[in-house]
Image (tube, rainbow, N blue to C red):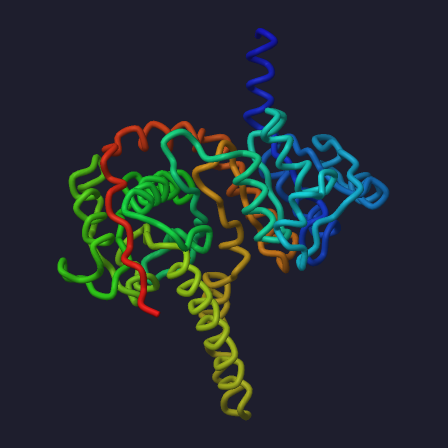
Length: 357
């Protein structure tokens, strides 16, 4: 194998890790990577962070120590650090991890740190892919018919029809790779399912998608209840609406959990009922386990960027690594580029009307 081929092969399995990002970093990060190292035996991890804290943790692992390299850094971007301040922190673990992707040392980056800083640094350093106007944040959630992909979840509050079409294309490829669906169905989130509903941007986007190469997979407009109902595999919307829907769904799941605990601890009869229902409740808990859905992805950049939840545990962080490695191994960006090239160039015509006030 030539030197260039060897370098390309190594790059295709290397992930840069912000080891200091997250509520319980670096302990949870290292523990999660140890789990991931077993699942992905060929993976290579570049850990950026405080070497005095990382080295002892890595040394105690069984697998990670054989496939990880620690890159010392002197700064940490905290949860309260503003994106503008994060941009000036040149030796921060997050900044250095993203720099590694830009320099061609890693194919992707993962962090459980400050979301705003990740978005700002990734967009400025990695930049968007050719043919992509704006990146989008995508994540997987539960539905009545399996898992559902939703995007954008907060990366963009300003958008036009071209952006929504790009989100649909990226979401379709994401669902094929991460969910293993051969032809995922796509829905455009609206205030109603009828064709005349919504503004000019949504109606124009629907027209473009119907005439596009993924037109057969385009279901049409979907409403809020369709997200959890599993009406489609991919739900496309703008970042403002998507973030509100995501937080509403998370709150509803917590409410259901709290109510179930109250119901089954209300008295002796309730406790007996819990014993009878325990096998089913265990399956429900596993199905709705937020760790299964950890790992939001910033799509459309020159490199894979995965955001883990800051409060996750080692299992959740390992799942986020699974998402990142799936995208790297399956050449996600190359497949995005091929599909985006098929989008008509004139689709960037309609923008949302400004709201009154």
